[in-house]
Image (cartoon, rainbow over all chains, first blue to last red; front, side, top):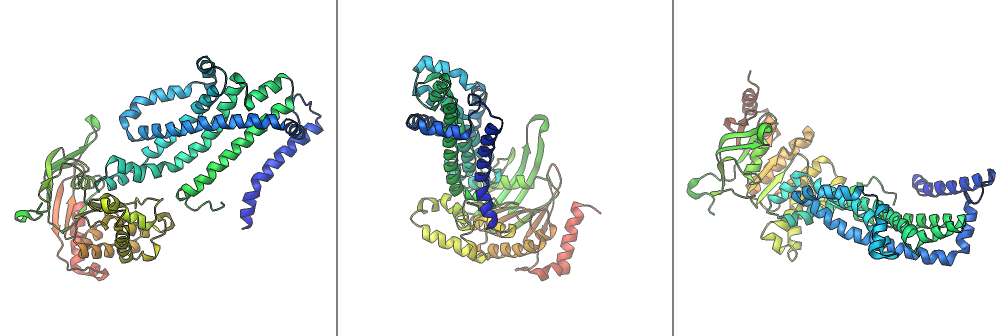
Length: 256
Length: 265
């Protein structure tokens, strides 16, 4: 039980220590606010601009979640196809790898040409960044099914669809959730990046315009808000993961 | 459809050859093998690693097709995976996201006609699965997950899964290989008991000669690559065989004779 408390408290203590050190460093070395504002200054900026921050944060969150949802939908379909049809895998793999190797920042100008400045490029950038890990993980979950397990089902007369539903899908759930936790962070990165380049709303835009007016505390406030949204979404997926794929944790992690 | 048509054996292999891989990497796993297994017979296949024992199971279950020769089951030539096999392997291959009960129910969700009736007859099928788990001593564990149980218990559940749909043939690929000696002998008795009750045709692949002699009616010894049958030995020991059987002079002699064939002198 004691151990349990320690594990629960540890992340809060580490986070608090980080901000305290940051605060102390700013005060002791008397760091200029234009270079690194202290956490208290960042909180002040957050408070002073709360309305604007909330509106833009909502914009960023919505764009991220839309892009992410599209990535989950198509990522799962793509992953299932790649993982269960060998020919499709062989055909698509080079394309997938090359698309993934393209720096996503580089496609934002193209998106602007196609869709203009606004929410659409942000959604698409979030999608392009978060899509790939989902595809790869779902495919890996399917591709690593024990051959004996397939034999058991095939010798019962199961067809492909049944093997997929009874084994493939549940089996790839832990992989899928691992991908979600990575991808949600990437989706935020995608949205904010696109907003700094090609938008007039959202946290990315807010940070860009704040830095234009040398309001450095507000820039940092934007960062803190994005980080907070990222960790919140991550925690939500981690909770769902624990209840859905408890069997993959094999009881070793009962900290809840 | 009539299995014992004109007294023909239930499973028949006719000059069967099967290889793995292509071109230079190709190895012949099984060469020109003839076999006849009667309905309800318990046969064991022993031999060194890589003698095509597992290939034999894939042929008999229709998971692989022979390159030459043919395999007949119940008087019909095997051209696709048979739909009524029970299988168990060295690792239990239970699904970790299902409880023991749900694992044992898996075949009933798939095999026809059970698959179509599964939803409406679920209670009855659960009763069948429960009864089977009770006979192997897992009655109190049906709501546990496989990873909460010992290897021996998992293997027992795996046997239940292989048998719940009352398959005509039961294919066992070293199912006791990873267990300790005590658990193994306990499971031999469970398998013997289940076989005597339901009389499926059993093909057991094993490394363990004592296991083969203890369980089987007929023991086949295979040579290493390419696998060929070196000998076919009838085991006339009465059933049910018990721990005492292993101390009978006949048992010891039969085991010795088999060992001689695998490692001459």
